[in-house]
Image 1: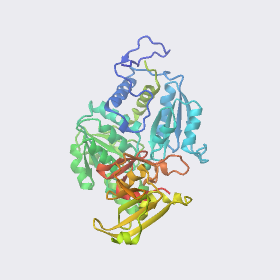
Image 2: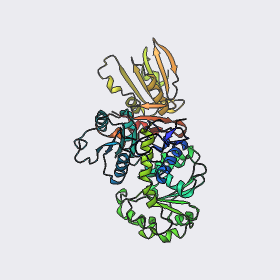
Image 3: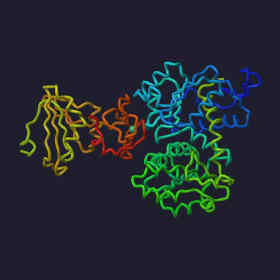
Image 4: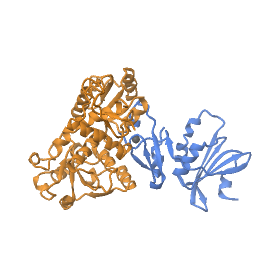
Length: 335
Length: 158
Ligand SMILES: [Zn+2]
């Protein structure tokens, strides 16, 4: 058992430290895909996140000697800021390549070279957002230090899924047995695969893929869920959406982007049917939780904001403590 | 005398790939990347299309004179063309080879997903696939995209 130091006083002293009675299975690891995370891994991250949220764990300055590189080869303000603030509040030095327009990447530097260069600067951990699928896996092969996937094209976004499932767990108390509807663009959303993979660790979870055929989940996700014995149902017809609403504990909404449709009239047809508003929620259970990775456009009506069903602001708030916990577990002392 | 022996003589040394589905010999040639042998003056390639076959009705045959197909190549051939027969010929002696199935394929195949890191220009990421025979697909180890085994010949790398 490795005792995790969860209550380091601000001065960095060890008095009053209370070890978390869990083995740190995350230390030194890459976080590339949620398929690599076991239920135990996720629960470890969640328990530390919970302590960060409640204030029981203060991780400030625990990574004072560390350098964390943030490489974002795609505009993303939210995830970048979340990682930046998390790293800085842990006391780590941050090396960042944020704006690909002005960096060496724009001049045609390969990801391979960027990884080699950033390692040369002494980074202890690399957080990567990249438009290519598989970029994070490749980067992890190139770099000798842990790589965290902050979004690899339309493939995965594991830290988003971690904070999503953490949110579900803290709202419902348990993830086992839940019914999750996923609505919108399931094909190009990077959060959906990660969420599916992570949920497959829990027992008796059922997912509903609510999307038109063009935007349904990719085949590898269906294959993975079948192999792991996770029940799922594709809800393609608009009328069916209302039908399944009463079954759901959580409705996870993603953005539908116009540019995904080869025919703009097809988009116009679909658009209205996938708007989550008070009327759609009236078909669901009273306690139904609505989640969204944000930012939203038109798919989530502001009228939902004031309803108790709106979980998405709390969900967004969980991003920072979760990323703090994760960085600490990867890079922090072994105890 | 069979139609086949009328068409082409036996070879004393090399590999004979028999029972290739009719008109798909070109895919075999591409899969083996035989053009890379251009400078190897000693190797001859004999391709027979649409030969009568008791087993298949019609079939293709590829004879590789003075060339031994590697174990890795043999495994991929057996995966893509389950009916194929691989015969090694040494001093006129024929040895039928039954390769196992590959669990992983490295290089050779281009990822069908255009946004995959292995398709990014100049990026030194070699495509690598896990073979999921029971599902009839291979899966890109970088981007997770699935490719049907029978479509592999359409995605061979140059
Ligand atoms: Zn790929």
